[in-house]
Image (cartoon, rainbow, N blue to C red):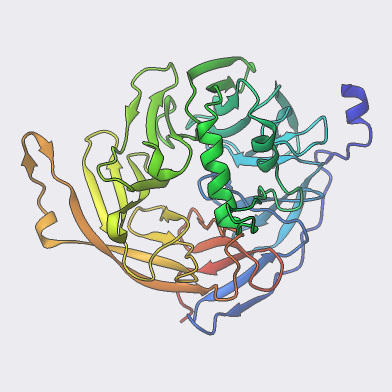
Length: 426
C-alpha cells in the first residue's frame, strides 16, 4: 500500500534551488490609508487557522499551502517560493525552535475530516523530510513550546453517517461545507446549517480522546477521554506540558474552555457560564503564554474580549463595542494591542488598543476572589473588507515583528492571501 501511494510523489530535493516569485502587487487601501500586499492568489491557496503558527522562529518566513505543495513567503518583501512539492492533505504549523513545518498526507486520498493520515515534518532550510507517525484517524492540532510533542484529538467511534458527511472538507479550500433544510423544508443558510449540524454532533455523544505524539520516537499517549466533543487542542507557547482545549458544540450549551496537563492532571475549567444563553469561544493563547483570551457574549448582546491569567487567575475583560465584533481576535507579539478580522456588521481588519476603566486600575478582592478588571477597546481600521464574503474566515495573524497582519479574503472575487501594514506610510 505504501509503495503504491509513494508512486508519482513529487518531492523537493534538498539543496535544489527554486526561484522566488516576483514582487507581489501592492497598493494603499483607499478607506484606511494602510498599505496592502497581495501575497498569493493562486487557485487553491490556503492560509493557516488563526491560532496555528505559520512563522519560522526567526520571524522571517511564513508558510502556507497551495495545490502544488508548501510555499513560504518572505516577511521582508513578501516574495514567495515553493519549498516542498508534494500533495499535502493538511498544513499544520511551524515549530517553535527550528524552521520545521509539520503537515499530513492522506494515503487513501479522501476528504474525511477525521480520516487516516500520515504526519510529516520538513526542514524549510534543507528540504529534509521526516515521517513522524501514522494516524488511523483524528487530527493533529498543536506543537509544544520545546518542539518535543504534538497534540491532537480523535473520535474513538464513528459518528452517525449523516453527521460525518457534513464534516467533510472542500478539497479546494480546506473548509467544511454545511447544508440542510429547516422545519418548513426550505434550504438553510450556511450559518443555520452549521448550527444545526453542530447541535446534532454534540447530541451524538461520540467518544473521543486527546493524545500526544513524541516527535522523536512517534510514541503516542492518551491525555484524556470523554464523550464530550473535544476540539481546538492548543499547547501553551511557553509551558511545554500545558494544554488548552475546548468542549465543542453550540456555545450556549457547553462550558467550552479548559486546560489540562499532558499527563492528564490538573483539568481546569477556564470560564464558567453564569447566564442562560451566555457563550464563550474562539479561545487562544497570548504570545507570552500567560493569558488565555476568548470571545465572551452575555445576554442582551453584552460582548467582551475576556482574558484569564493561567497562573494568578486574574481576569481582564475588555468591552467590545459596535463595529468591533470579529470572527477571531489575536494579540500583538508585545501584548499591547489586539487585532480583529471583522464580521458582517463591520467588515474590516482592525487593530484594537485596550483602555482600562479607572475603577479597574487597582485590583481588589471580594470574599477572597479577585475582581474582574474591565476596560474597552479603541479601534484603528487597517483593511477594508466591505466586499468580503464571511463564509471564508480571514484568520488574521500578526507577523512576529508586529509590523503586518496577514489574512485571507475573497474581496477580489476568489480567495487570496494578503498582508496589511500596521503602521501607515509616512
